Image 1 (cartoon, rainbow, N blue to C red):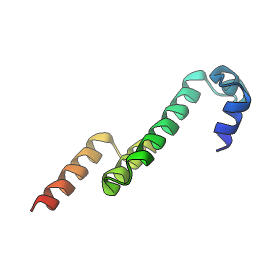
Image 2: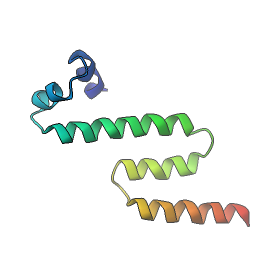
Image 3: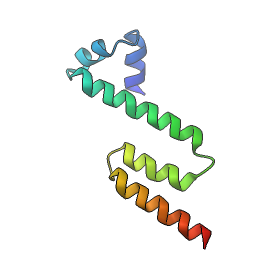
Image 4: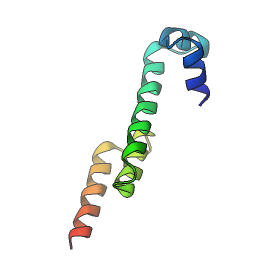
Length: 81
């Protein structure tokens, strides 16, 4: 929330946010991309909560994307049985 607040107060300038936090532009861009991904997942959450949970782990760099895909595929297979 703090990032979003500073982003808005900085008129949406990623360069200004990078200066403010003392990080590079790509670091700020990556953080913004993660926020966007989380928002998109929250919008889909109602339809498949387990898959959404696993994808949040990917976004937060807690598990690898390929591992996440394998987990979700196995979960879907178990539902079909």
